[in-house]
Length: 76
Length: 222
Image 1 (spheres, chains in turn purple, cyan):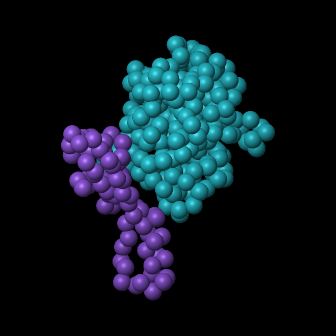
Image 2 (cartoon, each protein chain N blue to C red):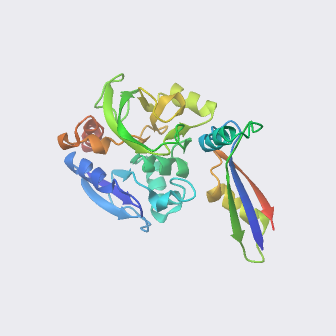
């Protein structure tokens, strides 16, 4: 079983890296970009008897810092 | 008086912190991250600066799950003293011992220089050697020192007089200019600046020495 976890800074939390990317895109002429948020993708390979609840537990305890980050789980 | 300094793979201010403790009169034990218990009779635990586990995933995130960190959290929960500096502050927020989180600096740059800090409260074992309102010069060296917490947490920190230090000229975008905060029982301090790097005249300044001296005074008389 495989799972993909997307971790993003929560709305309202300043993302200076995303802002830097937005500035660069603007400078390149991509002036239709009004916002960029940058996150990370973590792919997990899991034993067959794993469940989404296991992945949620991993997200809550380590993969995301829920003070500043939100996460979503995709089972592949 | 006993101090323990935790050493993670990637810690680089552990010896500086140990020397600062020793100069203040503490007997110091260095404790490897794989240990599951602190040495007996430890009064204060120091979580030093550096790049624990290479800052992988998030600064401090993996260190916070290490065996020794469970013992550090238990020590804090028992009312023991803990100081976390720079990466140590990040580790303490990741464990939940201190609220909030440290984000990437707003200017996206790693900053390494001395900054002026305002001592916001003298009501703690770490800041008793100063007067509230004192301005001290202490080095910073970080890429992720931008303190963040929700509005409710910031209001609580302010209302409970738990902001230990603020930046005079905010270098990293930290909310409410926060450079260091205290736990609810005022026995845990987390701060991004490095008082242990301003604890000897050879460092170019000694404004940080009072943090260790005040603590030693209180532990000695406790």
